[in-house]
Image 1 (cartoon, rainbow, N blue to C red):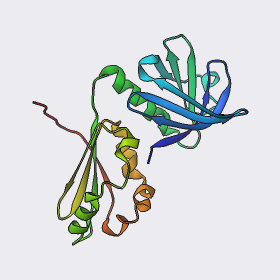
Image 2: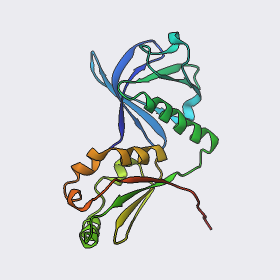
Image 3: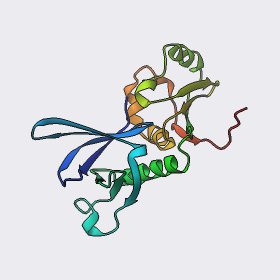
Length: 198
């Protein structure tokens, strides 16, 4: 499972493409198609000199919320969402976190409520791993805790905004058929409030 966004982007030469954007731990990846076939572009965060949200209508792509990445080679890429305007601000917030603390490792958690008596089944499922691929999410660490009433998935190394989206996207958990009968109630997002590293 990868967290992706439907976007349109404009290359420095003015050519536009539609496809998807993935935010990784070191780079953002744009994938789409052009007349010649599949197209992939990776932009390392270290290559982003500045970024800004387009305010002037002339800077926006098709009038939609647009993020402008000004690169170290003095070129620029414009990115606009197709169906989720809020993701442009989410990408901008991720870049802000990297610029402020490039060595920061973000941590966040999902709290998954269990139906009564489901603890043993949850523990059995966890022995086989989580209902997603940690490597595909780009995690640097992942832990899971179980109580009688809930399972807490702790994510390390991906933007906290990703984890918040996981909580809101019920289809991710519905796709994990073995977990569906164990979950009762709303999956909640928990941001990190305190950490100590000795």
